Length: 259
Image (cartoon, rainbow, N blue to C red; front, side):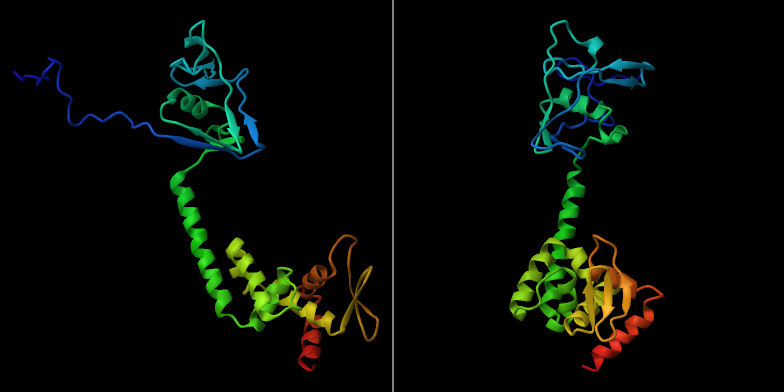
């Protein structure tokens, strides 16, 4: 007959194959829809479907109650507001009932909601690291590119190019750090190059802008109409990239090459 090993207190010793209880840890949640300086999670009339019992049950957060289910709480249960500040709420490991409530809440993204979600620290760290690497790459590209190569990008981001090379680079440096992905992609963007072409054609008075469109300076003929509320350079750039504007693009490039 197999004998069962006992502990010093007379209880059976824990089986080495048994799993240890899940380690409690601090959790951070963030509001992804709405929010503001202060945001309170709904607690009135919150119900969820309990898979174990196969029925809809009411839940609420009461700090002194071990259960989040209303029907399992005492008559003296006191509900407490759940407040996100600056869209963030840190739930310490010492409040497992609060975590349980937020995990079960229908507004949680994991339950199909759209108000708040748990912050994945590992993913957040990876995203931050990736952005830092991109920023370093963007700064390196800014350093290595000639000012001629940077001018189209500067025009695209609205940087005043009527400044010294150092000032242009300095202004682009802030963009490279804050929008590294967009900055790096801009060097291969046809729209960026075309926008630069339109800008130069305007500066050299090959084309001119009027209220209703972009015109040839020498003949006064309309090149493309510009709808009310839209920017001339943006509309003209998109036009040049279209099949209809290909011949105009070739004409502009030819005229600029002869200056």
